[in-house]
Length: 541
Image (cartoon, rainbow, N blue to C red; front, side):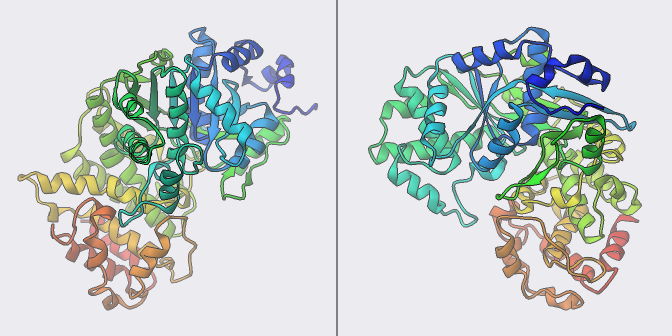
């Protein structure tokens, strides 16, 4: 059997790909690439899996329908090795593997990404090309999937990060933080005609457009104060008719590339598709495997025009509906359940979310959390039904045995997720006089489980590797006095953490949840099997 590489030249062998039921783009790649290079319309920062497997596919759909005639230019601000090893050797193509719940896998070559760039301040040629792209009046949108921490200018204590301080002091000619890079590119656009533009965050975090806007404006205001940019530039950024920051809600589970999918691809004869880990710790492959269900809800504010994304299944709506959709998903109906499974899955030795969904204790935990604690304070977006959304998550999406998603992946950056995934619900309970925040059980149980996880000891008493988290060392220092096998060691150890509003979005000591969390953690410290016993105590009631 002839093997084939994933390159533009290989796509001319249409029958070879058709024999393997791999769908190919239905447009002229050379024409689209040339048109995009000359008159770019869409630039995206964050060249990882959710972009390649979801966002870029939206434009592919429009190109296939003849509803768009340009592609997307991808850029990365964090891991430049992705561009060198995943994009350029494969002519910016991606092999998409749809993991269906019935065990079938659908394949498609995504070709809508026509160019890939490194937003690396140490590579002038790369930055010059990005400046040219962003200065083009044809550009309609810059979108982002850089994770929530990509927007952060401050540390846990609210202090500006040293790299941000440096960028503010040196100005747009010398930038390093992702937000400084974007702000410098917007300064170039302003100086070259000040055409309108939308900066659209598609990251999985609350008020993502606001986070992006606040960070860009903070840097621009510092630059104006230090004499690097003009007040007119600030006015341009603050005028929604010139620069818009639409909010969005995105939802698609895109796990790490899986060995079983790699084997299927190799068996078909597509070569050189093995995953690897970059020097920055990114585990990635030339293919993307993901679930089929997906949701993208975007505030329809694009002052320089936009692709007809609604024709590709995107919900184009107003900010209130986006906010309700995002809050529904992130704070009540999916993300809290995912994080709870991640924490307890790691402690109980699971390596697949789908296997966790065979565990009645864990299914009971997330069911009671979602329906019992989330739905009473859910924001109903109307375009999506919250109860039906939870049902799809618990009954179809998470149990999909062909989704190789791991609790260890979901546990990454948990400290950044906790204030949104749990803190917002806690805030809603505090704010509602008809609800008793101290009656919450499964959210406090998960917080206690997270503290137990941070000890790095599983439920059998064995050492356990922890997923990366920007606050991991800080949190472990705070919990240094808490010991496995010593339930009383938790006494007096948690109040500093639980009172941290940055970490939990509320003061959990002041609202009365601290004693419950402390008690639950104490129960999980008794010895081997204590996590399981504690779960059963609270879930099976």
